[in-house]
Length: 372
Ligand SMILES: Cc1cc2nc3c(=O)[nH]c(=O)nc-3n(C[C@H](O)[C@H](O)[C@H](O)COP(=O)(O)OP(=O)(O)OC[C@H]3O[C@@H](n4cnc5c(N)ncnc54)[C@H](O)[C@@H]3O)c2cc1C
Ligand code: FES
Image (tube, rainbow, N blue to C red; front, side, top):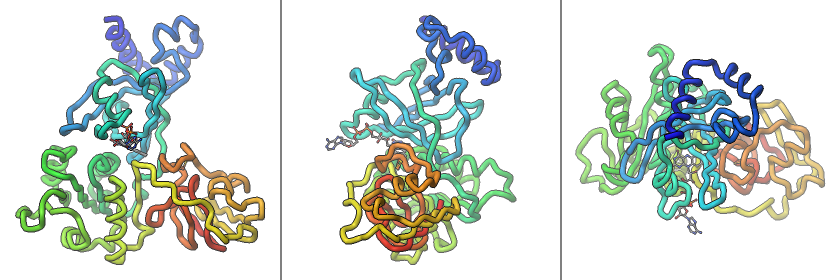
């Protein structure tokens, strides 16, 4: 009862008062009582109130969230870290964001088998509850290219949905040429079904791939069996002209990278987002001598020459130790904040196609050129 009344007051405050005024009032009345009584507004942290829970597909729920006054917006394709109070501890996980009108955003969570956080959210997270969230982060965002293919599977559709939705509200003349291919196991697993149908009706080329179907079971022009090199080429004949945004389970990502490579796609045009931490893939390559090797961070115009003291350090550590202002987040190869593209040279450790996760990867050639 009290929770609902407080939620109403908080909504009223955020709907009618500009965030900087809310911030001003709150920070000048930050008493212990106010913090205890209404910790959603009386806080220096970014928090979000659950407004609605939507059943998207079996085992998939969308949570509509209302952030407090500390929200600074986000770029479509980015994600937030959420902090979940589970069994007396705080469990941290990342979820991609979808933008909604009036300053709301949503996250769409697929329940992982025996998954701690997703299971808890599906069972316990209800409208009226609030969560601590991190500020949006990540580089899996449209970078202005004119021809795009969004290639995704399962919950990997979430950042693609966010980017496509944002691109479709642009004036038609400025809008890139968009194609989307989304793979699910069976028809009932399709996430954002209505939106995909609407996009197709609006003229977007949408292909739904069902990995449970064999090629001879497919009779619809916009439905495919499991995606492979042949299906990719058939449904997207101008694949080589497009920048590809790829997101999905690890197996799917690895398969797609291999198919795209077989089709002669330039992997520096494949932009990736991974939801699962890769298996640790060794450390600094044996026999590689750091001293004298050069790393050029092209997007920052920063060229550094490694010394013997850089031996065995990750690319992130090397850059930071030489004064290069590199972005980072989890430092565990999860969040993708540190991710760059390899333009020249080789790396070892955590990479996917041409994408390299600096926090868990190492230089492996004398000259290395990295770019955003
Ligand atoms: C940038 C980014 C964006 C993301 N966006 C989304 C999104 O939009 N939607 C979404 O649904 N997810 C997203 N994720 C994934 C999300 O962060 C969680 O990883 C996911 O929800 C699973 O978390 P969990 O706690 O439920 O599962 P966990 O408990 O972490 O388990 C994950 C899987 O590992 C298995 N597992 C756990 N422990 C063990 C063990 N000891 N041995 C063997 N197997 C084990 C579980 O069975 C489960 O299948 C994103 C991840 C990242 C990094
Ligand atoms: S992946 Fe999170 S900082 Fe590198």
